[in-house]
Image (cartoon, rainbow, N blue to C red; front, side, top):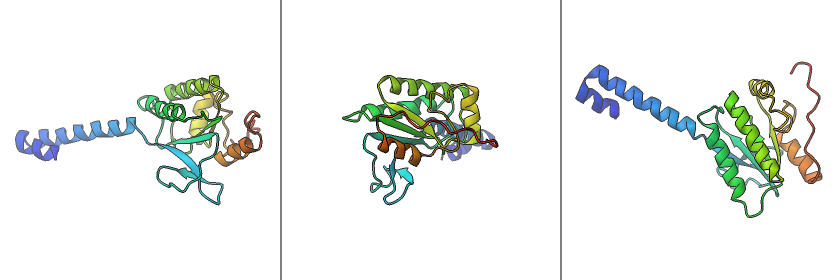
Length: 186
C-alpha cells in the first residue's frame, strides 16, 4: 500500500524505493522479535512441540523447555533471552531445569553465543540447571569456537530434549547428562 501511495505521490522509482525500504524495516523488526516456543511433550510420545499452539501438550514438572524459532544474531538475542528469563521468573515456583532446544536456530553469531552463556550463568546462579540441546553443526562449531559450550551443558549432536528430560526425571538432583564423547565424524 505504501509503494502504491509512493508511486502516485513521488513517481514510479521513488514509490518502489519507499515500498522496498518499508519492507526491509518490517523484515528487521520481525526478525528482531522471533517466537520463542515453550515446549511440552506430545501425549504418548517422546517428542516436544509448542505448548501455546497445542494446549494438550504435557508440561514437564519442575522443568521448562524453550525453542527459539529463528537464527540467533546480535539484533534478536537480547529479546530471546528476555522472553526466556521473564517466563522463568514468572513461574510461581522456579523450575529446577531449563532446556534450550537449538534445533530451529540455523545460525548463532559470536554475540549470541556469549549472551546465551550469560543467561546460562544467571540461571545457574539461581540454582537452576541449564542445558542446550540439538544444535546444528554450524551452531555447535560457533559455540565451541567461542568456548561457551561447557556453560550450555556440553554441546553435542547426540543429546536430545527427551534424553535430558528423562535423566532429569530419574535423577532430579543429579547434574545433567555429561556430553557424549565426540563422534569421529562430528
